[in-house]
Length: 331
Image (cartoon, rainbow, N blue to C red):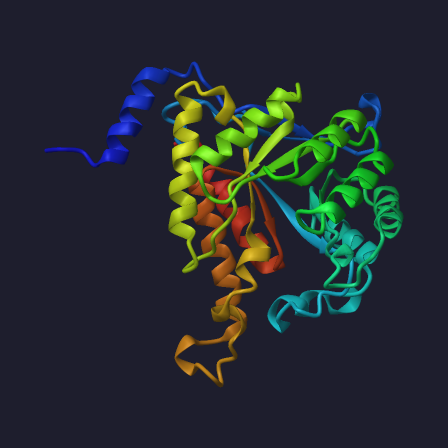
């Protein structure tokens, strides 16, 4: 019986690999002994086998969920996901404290969406002021997500990188068209970089090579393959991530970076989580539907190799955390 092409690649990879190749271990956050102020660091990656294949190799670090914290009131979010945060929707500092102190968040993603010209057009100085407040108020490592590719992104992330010098934050994102400024800022101020490409294996490798050509260490790069949610390209994202991971385990050093997937921003914008049950009664409860959509997308991406998941709804996060616990158990 002939094996499917993906299975042939898989078995060839495993036979040739023999545990010799592994995903880079990336550390987010510096403690006081490392020149920062974080209470602890988080390490992701490091595995030398396919996701959760404990019978084939070693997976030293569990995937980590980052809680998304927008810098301005997210009025475009649907009620289902705004509901748990109603007391502090317009107060990102309280929001960050709550998810860390009450929900047990170990990593937060500060989304500087307010700096977008089509949002509140906040200045880089305003973003820096908020970042400094959060760094003083919460002790966990940070992902800093800029307003989107372009001149504004470069200015905002560079200013934030300088303000957070020594904290070893993860800057999102560097893209092929404009990566040099953000990589230079990360190098100068001791941070990490997300390399973002549009769901394409070759473009992913090309950007990683370009970043490497700037003499930026590979163990300070995380891959964002772009995330398609359930029903909106999830299978395409899964396939591309799987191919990248197989190349990495085959010894391709330019593909051995951990993955990050921005699940919450992708899932909660789709029609199926927004439409009320009065309009589509056969779809069931909107509240349950949205949470399940985020869970389903996140769990699928874990099996594709996700090391970092950026999520929104606390119920979805709780379920995925338990799922990770189960998947990390050997045997």
